[in-house]
Image (cartoon, rainbow, N blue to C red; front, top):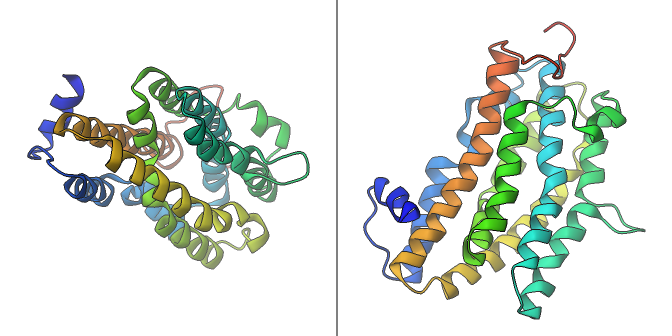
Length: 254
């Protein structure tokens, strides 16, 4: 009932078809995705200094490095071998393989390029408390909720390519300490995210067969947008407003 209540608060009427579900999911993305957050406007508009960009990349690393853990949990929820086969490439996309580079390594190229110590980044010891709480909550969500909700929570990928395009162009335009070689994570996701989103969307449209199930799907996406949004809230409060918690990363000059 919690999920149904959460969705009802949005003012939506019951969703009686797969097409209505997709329409509502896209509305959630248009109104709740973290592309709308003021911190992103500052980041992409060249309004942050290098230390603030470092803080963003450092904290975001915890999210990026947790994605394959989250996907391993999702994979473990399914006895259907074909679903596991489809889902497991996501883990390799981020972890890479013994002879191939993955998304985590590409993110570390960004933090290297920003002048952050790699051991410090990988330790995650200097990230904001809210970053850790939000990302860990996401992993717990896919572990504890239904497999349908676990897959639905990944649907923010529907909206990621536009954000990545904005990020690539904005950061390359505005920051002289950013060059194309450190933006390969976002360039690669322009291909990966649409592929992953297409599968997840088709899955939820097929398997959410009642208004109650479709409400669960919508709430899972709302939860994920909140996970992303609160991380930017924490960054804004710490590195724009200046309320940096003790024992976390403090850039020079802040």
